[in-house]
Image (cartoon, rainbow, N blue to C red; front, side, top):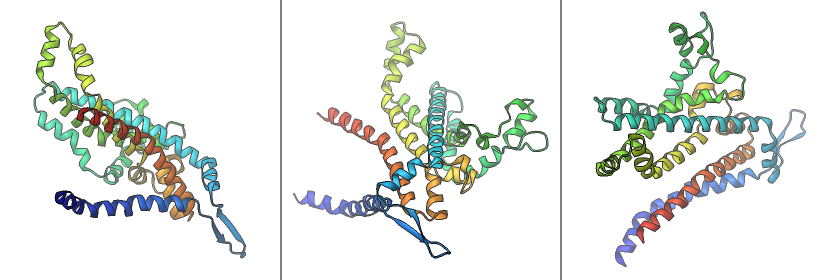
Length: 302
């Protein structure tokens, strides 16, 4: 009993801090999202900025700019998650095969994780410069001209097309695919060689060894990587902010639009409603994973 109280006393400060600064602030944000806000005009009249109540959410969801931001978020998330998983698994497979200089390549793949999104965004802003042609092209577009592939030049994220945010996912893929590589490489190394040899003795090809022996055992790692990368994509702010600026319609996502609503439009209830919806979207992704993890660990503990 004494040890139990000592343990509780040790974790009590962190529990209090989490309650106050995480769940308390979430509650405050939800309360703010239902507030009514008015402003005085120069003529002395009262202008309604936020109607209050559920109408704040209805107005936000009906806003074409917010709908555009949600679409951008969907495109960014699909390309970001798909590209990161693809390159992460590919690099893990190459290293798992035992290439020479593995330590060097592992460092090269992991190095981007040490760079902040703001720093990498500043560099990629130049690389993804939308200028095309001999006089305007810089960054990747200039590289395509130099290697004789002018047809690959693009306006990147500034393109008015519906999938322009796919280009914005390039720096995010570059930065986090090394993380996915590290997860899968650790998973591959955790599987004993006996299982591979047994499959090969039974006549399985190398593809079947991976398909039926290795990959099924890595499904928890794949699920964890999907959840982590997915929720990071939905919360992305600093990368887009550093590339596209603080108020750019074509690159809007809910997180950057929230900044505009709060600091430029001075509409705290709408920004809070935006934050609450974003929290719910992330919860839809994360909560099922937590339930699955708890059930899996509970089954193992029985």
